[in-house]
Structures are given as C-alpha cells and as structure tokens.
Image 1 (cartoon, rainbow over the protein chains, first blue to last red):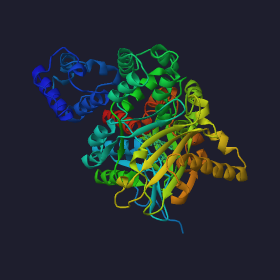
Image 2: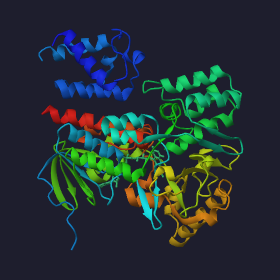
Image 3: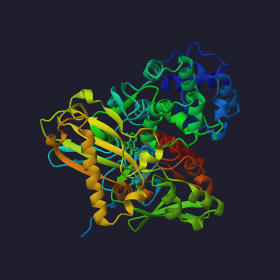
Image 4: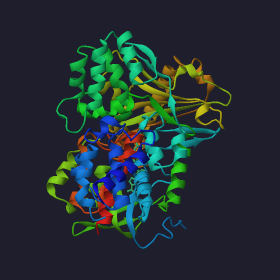
Length: 83
Length: 471
Ligand SMILES: Cc1cc2nc3c(=O)[nH]c(=O)nc-3n(C[C@H](O)[C@H](O)[C@H](O)COP(=O)(O)OP(=O)(O)OC[C@H]3O[C@@H](n4cnc5c(N)ncnc54)[C@H](O)[C@@H]3O)c2cc1C
C-alpha cells in the first residue's frame, strides 16, 4: 500500500469508530486526540482493526506512534508496503 | 447421579476463559468474534460474577452491583457487545449527599460540580477548573508518588468538606483511599464525575442474559458449575486447564478469577520466577462490602425525590478507616423505583458499606448472625430519615457480608473491587512469565467496576488475539 492508501485505510477505521465526527478537516501533524473525541480505548480499537483488516501487528510499546495522522502513516508505511 | 456440566466439550480450544464476570465475558466475546475457539468456564450457577442479582419470594429482584457506572459504558457496550445493550443504559439524575457537613443534590457532572463548588463551597471558579483539568489529564506517565490527599491539599487546602464531596463517592465506587496514588483518583474521577452516573434499565439479570445470548451467537462455548482447579504449564507455556476433574487442552488462558488465586493457586508458585511470586504476594487487595437489601411490599411506593443514589453519613468528617468499620456511620443507598423493572412495579432499597473481610470472617457463628441482625436494624433506623414508616412498608430484608461475597465469587477476602494499584502491573506482566497466560479482571483500581472490567476484558482480548495470530 502507498502512503495515501494507508491514510485512506486509517480514515475508514476512524469513521467507523467516530461516526459523528467530520474527518475531512483533519490536520496531518496535530495529535488526533486534540481534533477528535478519542480516548485510550479508541486507540486500542484502531490497533485491533488494523490487525483484523490488514494483519498488521503493533506492539504496545509502539502505540505512541499513533499520535497524529502523519506519525501513524509514517509508522505503518514499512509494515504495510507489501500489502 | 450428578449432571455432567462439561458434556460435549471439545478436545481443544484456542482460548479457555476462567470466570464469567464482566471482564471474562467481554474477553470471551471479543475473542470469539475474532474467530477463535473459546471455552468460558464459570464455577457458579450464574454468569456475571459480581454483576449479579437474586430473586426473593414476593416478586422481588435485588441487584448487587447496579448502583451506577460512568457514561463510557454506553460506548463500550455498543462496540464490544450490542446496540440493544447500549440502548438500555440511562442516566441517574438525582444523586444526593447527606452528612453533617452538607446536604445537597446533584446531576453528578462537571458543570454541576463546578456550580456547587463555586456557589455553595465558595471556591474560586478557576481553581475548580484547574482541578478538573488536572484530574482529566493524569495518565500513567505522571508522577505516581503523589497521593490523592496531596492532590486535594494542592487545590483545596484545609477544605475537608470539599474533599468529602469529591472523594466519598469514589471511595464507594472502588474502595480507594486518600493514601492511594492520585493517578487512580484522577482517572476514575474523570470517568465518573464528568458526565453523570448511569444505570442499566431492565436490571442486571437482563444485561447478563443479553450478554449470554450474544456470546452464544458468536460461538463461545459457555459452561456454568465448571470450577477450574488447575492451569497446566509446560516449558514456559500454557498447555491445558483442569476443570471439574477433567483436563482440557488450550493454546491460551484468560483468567478472570482473582489475580492472586490465579497465580498462586491455579498456576502454582513453583512454576514461576521467585521475584515475580514475591511481587504477587505483595499485591494488596481492596476491601469488601456489606449490603442490606430492603424490598417494599406490592403497592408500597417511595417518592422519586428520595433520589437515585444517596451518600449518607452521620460521621462528622470523612475518614477512610471509619468507612470500613463494622458499626457503619456511612452508607450509600440505591433507591430502585418501578422504572428499573417496569413489568414488576416494585420499589427496593439497597444500602452498601465498605467493609473488612477479617472483621466478619473471624466472628463465631452466633456472633456473626447477631452482627448481621444489628446491621439490618441500624440501617432501618437510618432509612427512617428518608422514608418515614419504612418498617411498615417492608416485605423482605436481607443482609450480605464480606463472607457472602467470598462464597459466591471465590475472591480472596471477598474483595469487591479487585486489587490495589500494584495489581495492574502484575496482571499485565503475567504473559511475560508464561506464554499464553493472561489475567483480566478488577485490578489496580482503574480497571475495576463494570466499565473497568469490560474495558480490561477488551484490552486483554487484544493481546490474546495478537498472541494467537503469531504462530
Ligand atoms: C457490593 C458491590 C457493589 C458494587 N457496585 C458497583 C457499581 O455500582 N458500579 C460499578 O461499576 N461497579 C460496582 N461494583 C464492582 C463491580 O461489580 C466489579 O468491579 C466487577 O463486576 C468485577 O468484574 P470482574 O470481571 O473483574 O470479576 P468478577 O465479577 O469478580 O468475576 C469473576 C468470576 O470468576 C469466577 N471464578 C473465580 N474462580 C473461578 C474458578 N476457579 N473457576 C471458574 N470460575 C471462577 C467467579 O465465580 C466470578 O464469576 C460493585 C461490587 C460490589 C461487591
């Protein structure tokens, strides 16, 4: 997957998790938490969905990489490039 | 002839879940949804663990732990259970306090607490704002050395009345004290006291039944009266469990049984690293509870102005040790109106106190019965203040003690709210000791209560799912 496909994949997960939020205005390098009403269970759900949909494993010590859209895509690129 | 509660159990499972409390059921359900073969084993004849209820003649149903939970339960039930379950969660809007320092009613959310603190307690609005923000922003990376007492002293020095307002409900909710890390208070406080208190309409029986249906739909093999006696470990990994004398092979185990029982009894300390065993032994348990259940006769009603939850105390000041004492001067009342179970049209009251197991377990039989009688009597005297003529309206009264909680859940010391803070680290570290071995259940204060247990079940299911996919 390319960076922009990965971005789309994240957006699709986010729109399932937060159906009432407008995701079109999401800023790339501002923490997701500051833009959306997300709590720690939501981040866990993102991890679980990535594993379910794409078989990507994200160990707990790497959860901090999921802070912003930019950092998430950068973290996932090497893991998802062959999908 | 005894019935075989394990009839038809398969030769092996991906995961065996020990215990059908909220954490165990949620983990079982999540793992079955993810496509794993799950066996859920519960020693009692009912599912639910401490989320339980009982029936008494006269059409009464008492809920044991349905006093209130945070708003987050709606989202967690929608996501990890069903929309039907989530849709039955409603707010309790009349939460009352009555003690020698103040008497008031609140909707139990940030706006209303702010209003009360400013108008009635004359605290500067910006101090209140900063306190709420600080509590909200606390997380694991914060300094864990500061205690809840120190947190209060920083914002409200010398204000024992404010401490009481902000702390008493949390102590009831999870047994935490002013000496516990402020972090645990911050997390529970922001969950609980920012958006109100909620309940499940239809009662605990209805919730647990809906959960059972959903688990069965997702393919969980659910067994009651199935007591797990042993978790087998070989070469550093989980291999099987022995239940009712029968050994069932499995790739992973999630134990919802008490943390200490799981590690020291079911696994056995000889299987584990010495240092780890020492850490487990050092984990402190939370206190237990007493409850007095009161059912009003058919047609006897309580006015809803009595409130939904009432934190009542005759103690001049708030002190944790007083809250635990056997001659309780502080109680939490839950008033249940017909709206809880509309088809039954009954009013019930449940009075709860926090309590020490040892105070009750060590009493000789006769004294124990006497102490129960005294508790019922003093409680009814106290209820008289809120529901005049209560004794004439009653149809049934019953008392449970820490000994009762111990009997039904097998929790060490009848612990109502799991372990103190250090239990969380031990629970999380278990899979590093034994591959495939997980614990999910009330630990560390933060992960206790209905919402904490459900969420911890999900967190652990996530780890187990990752483990099972690895090979
Ligand atoms: C009196 C009281 C009032 C409460 N009020 C509230 C409230 O108002 N709001 C709130 O949010 N929380 C409340 N709580 C706390 C809440 O009920 C618990 O934190 C939560 O239900 C615990 O869930 P759990 O999954 O951790 O474990 P538990 O509910 O303790 O479940 C553990 C299960 O494991 C089973 N088990 C143990 N050993 C074995 C074995 N060897 N083999 C098979 N099965 C086994 C037990 O039988 C039990 O079913 C209250 C608790 C008490 C006691």
